[in-house]
Length: 119
Image 1: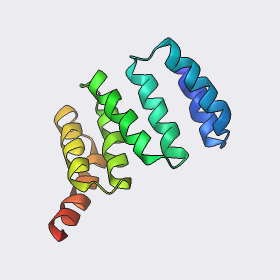
Image 2 (image 1 turned 30 degrees about the vertical axis):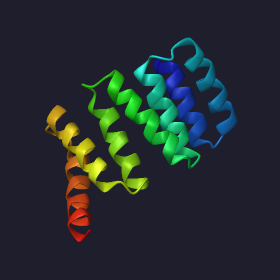
Image 3 (image 1 turned 180 degrees about the vertical axis):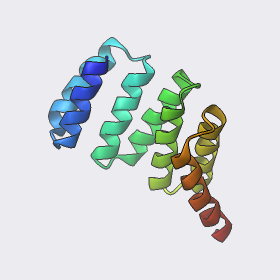
């Protein structure tokens, strides 16, 4: 799956969204219970501006693999874009719980704590 993930990431980076989408849909039909497939779908949806589906995909990936901090970090970032700071905070706390050294999550958490306090 690593090669496929790299291919999809490269296609997204090159803004070849239709090609990335085709690969992802094929993967999804084969492995619709795979956390990494949902993570890649979330990355795709995020890139094309479909934040709602990005959140759903990242949430599903974190449910399927609840010990992977990368999935919760992506979920937190998607919640931020979706303007759900409280849910983003929860996701970042999970990242910290899983991986105490995750500096980005800690940084984002501080930003969101201020935002939540401001209301």
